[in-house]
Length: 115
Image (spheres, rainbow, N blue to C red):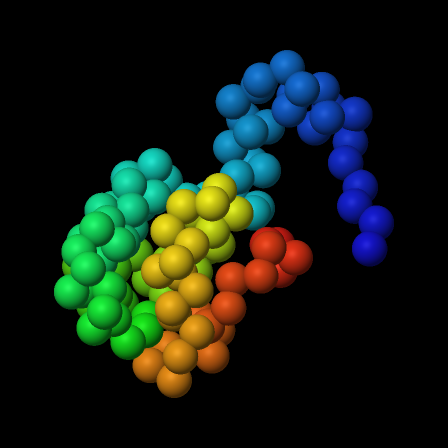
């Protein structure tokens, strides 16, 4: 799939024009630092507590907590994949691949990073 961009768009992005950057972010969507940090705190609750890790069943154990901080399933999946790509919370994220997780929240293969 070919992607076309005008010279003006390219120049604007390369030179930090706010309008060009905002337009691109609107087109692709973005995840805020607050969302990343919020999900990280929730993951920490489980990751740092051996009993919570032992009793962890899957994504549904986390989803209501994500919802409380305003992160829906799609955003949560993006953030989980981001953490996984960064090598963070790998052990916990690997445990999400269970029947206690929706199908779209079971695996976080890095080759699927753009989905």
